[in-house]
Amino acid sequence: MPIAVDIDVMLARRKMSVGELADRVGITPANLAVLKNGRAKAVRFTTLAALCEVLECQPGDLLRWEAEDTADSLAGGG
Figure 1 (tube, rainbow, N blue to C red):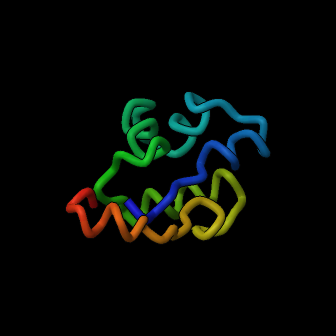
Figure 2 (figure 1 turned 90 degrees about the vertical axis):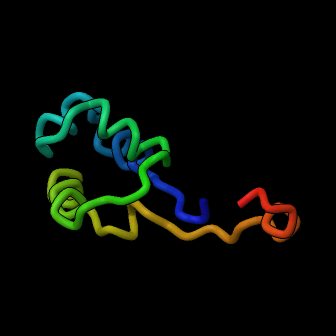
């Protein structure tokens, strides 16, 4: 997927655990792990806003676009 999630980077910068972030945002650690590991298909703006508030960052600090490998896309891998 061309959207990369950098929640782990912000967690490290804030010296915060996944469990603490999940608790402060109001989501389960399992759902946060799905988002953090890039397996989520969608994220609610309210969740994104809560993540930004707790981590004191901007959405662009958590999400970034990466170009897909063209050969992979042509082979049907994307």
